[in-house]
Length: 108
Image 1 (tube, rainbow, N blue to C red):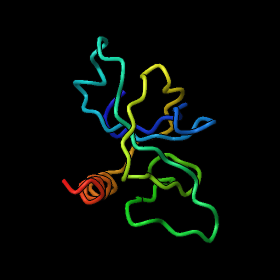
Image 2 (cartoon, one colour):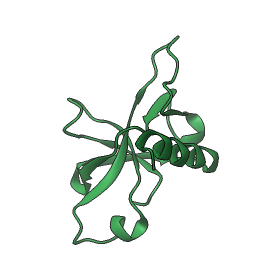
Image 3 (tube, helix red, strand yellow):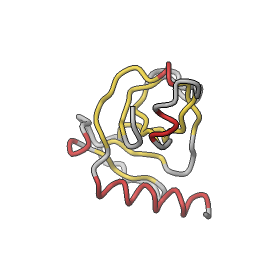
Image 4 (tube, rainbow, N blue to C red):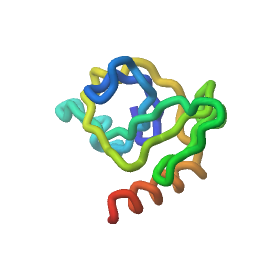
């Protein structure tokens, strides 16, 4: 597991598994004594719905089958054991967008 990987994960924020983007650096992801990683929650964008101001669209270029919103206004701590299946990896361009939107949303 590495930063920018997209996993299907079960979280306390969602009743069923959803995609998440791993935000923690490799030093945290690879450290077996650290049990949690920071993630951004993602969900499918319904047809005709647009993205919100702090959301980034992910799609096939990132390994996902459908247009998916990455919600950058909230960061969740999730147990590594709840990361079920690797789905893909965020493309370079969208990494820049996610970083920018997290900074804006959290006023950093």
